[in-house]
Image 1 (cartoon, rainbow, N blue to C red):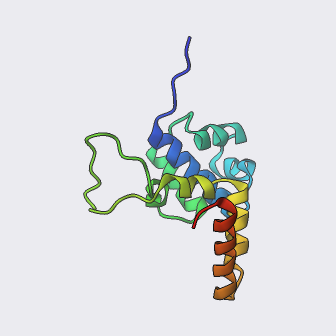
Image 2 (cartoon, rainbow, N blue to C red):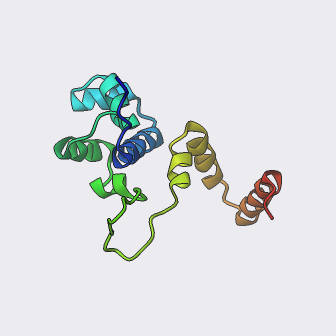
Image 3 (cartoon, rainbow, N blue to C red):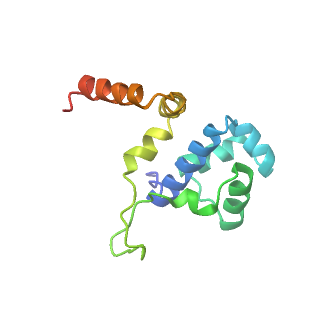
Length: 133
């Protein structure tokens, strides 16, 4: 029996839960305890394997100290769907990057650099290494 692929929206919401949890340096176990769940259930939510219900999403938002809308920022649009807001969603690669431990660590450290010229030079260096001009 073939496994059903996770819904792209469920996967996106789950990755945003993971990103925010990691930003707060919170473990899956701690989030699970706050929700009355196992860390395995949190893991399934974060992968998009299990869909998060509305009341559970509200509870997660409260625990992670963000509005529910945070989890839908940059969500993929399905064909025929319009946001009604007139603005394009942020590129998925940004939220995918921020959802990784490396991306989150790099972003946190980069934002601690107060000298804007030094930050710009670091961006220039990374662009050169990546081969962008």
